[in-house]
Image (tube, rainbow, N blue to C red; front, side):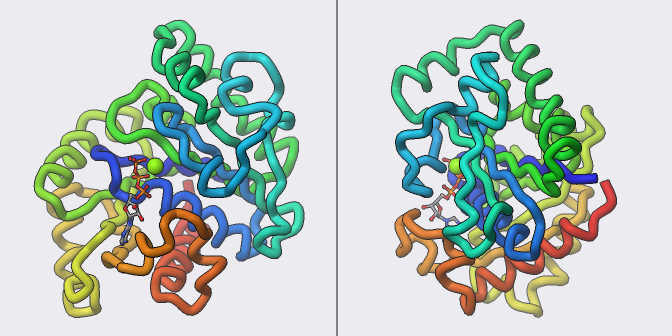
Length: 259
Ligand SMILES: Nc1ncnc2c1ncn2[C@@H]1O[C@H](COP(=O)(O)OP(=O)(O)OP(=O)(O)O)[C@@H](O)[C@H]1O
Ligand SMILES: [Mg+2]
């Protein structure tokens, strides 16, 4: 039985795209069959990050009922030495598509949720995928709520910024709890010294006290990440970097979780 993991956050820019992409690649490198999906229809990033700008079909088409999911998936496993194990589904980055997706009504969103839920059958069961990883829009966008409802595990990326902490706490109480979703926190962009071993216990108990959910990982602020300018898959290009080791620990923990 495979797992659907949604990477979400309250505020924008907390590292969802960075974490979801590198988590997906790490799991593929562990030998899992993985599909990474860009559900951030308001600001699609994966087509640019992965340099795939002329997809024939997008996830927009799948959710609109225009095509089936196998038309959307692109196999890019050979780029990371994981033949037939790393697929992506892209959101259409054109202005027209972004405007179209932000004008959908409730009825359309309900149908889109049905199509997301059926990925469990079409990909996890029929095509033996081990993971579907959703990169989402921040906050309470309908598309993100749909992603959370369809997921087995929600990974919430948050920083230690006070407004992020407060918003995340409220979201945990009012949203994830409502759907009874297994939720874990990744603290991102943490000051390097706080993320070291001495600070780790403190962060662990802070997360337990404030959010009441487990701490999945702590990622320091690394200058090398913005320096890469969103042009590389970090864990693939920099296997010796501490970021890659941390993502390895996060992926191993997710792999062990019973959901
Ligand atoms: N640990 C980190 N250290 C340094 N920079 C980071 C770290 N994590 C993310 N960043 C930088 O923060 C910016 C936002 O990251 P990313 O795009 O992954 O966030 P996001 O949550 O997907 O944003 P959005 O909500 O806009 O989709 C990027 O420039 C990225 O390089
Ligand atoms: Mg993003």
